[in-house]
Image (cartoon, rainbow, N blue to C red):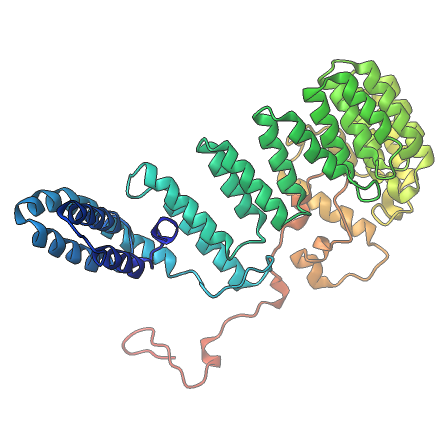
Length: 475
């Protein structure tokens, strides 16, 4: 019993009962009496170095026990264990602060957003961090205390994946790989639907060379085709590429393409893997082109493809890609493509192509909510956008803020605008509006006080209150 619960801060009575039981054991001869005294002494010596509520009482009992056996022997033993007892007592005082924050009547339920549950999670994390700090500076017993604390914590936070993960990774870092595996196995029984824990478990198995076990975990994530996620496909492809080579990854990708859960993410991930890891831009280009047949309607996919072509310095195909995408995407979904197209021309194109694409963008987006009818007009902000670079601007922040206000007013010129909104800039922070392309949004979010609502302070308006300016003059 003491082996399992003796590390608990409330285990003092258990130690006392155990010692009383040892003392009550019958001893027929001197040898048995000596063995009994030795067992009692060892129990006391373990109890007095364990931080418990009854540590002081146990120390007094130990002193009485040693003095009753032999005062001569007691002097040496007590002086040896006095520093250890003092250390345990000091640790107990610190430990009690953490233990007192824990609700020992809490039920093991899934995590919620309640303040109480969150505070209990914090309390347990603090206690675990304290125990892992090894405050008593002991070796072998320290790990047992930490294991006990984790097991105790899981009685209450059984459905918290981060606690299981912390426990398993701590076991692995401590060199107990088999124990870490067992913790992950228990974790998946507690939370069988947790993808995070499956990836963590597979990572552990892969790191120690158990590739078949890791592969089974990845395959369990694939499971039923209807429930498989695109992320599961991507991670399995990466696993195969790391451990079985390029051909195995390619073969699985070709199968994954047929899955209903295969999204554009799978194409992007495999293409970038072929480009960056396999150093094969031709395969990557073919994968992106194959994906266009299904995902031409995905602006994010188009932008990923454009980034890839930029790495190849293939400006001709980048322009062709933008043109193909803009001809097929609806107006509202083409905003980001136009922004990237104008940015590309601004950086790599000549002046004529830059101005041409910018004008085309204005014409194409003139009917959208973001641009409005004023998009057809040329503004100074367009010039600023063309001649800026990252966080460098051809004007002061004050000028930029002023121009941003004018841009907002031009878009809302047909609407009735409250005068106070103009003075404090609150209308310009409306979520329905956005900054012009290439202009930092921070300039549109500057809040200023509404000075039109300010009144002159007059102390005489406060009846019954006098303000003395000097000893003889009062208001």
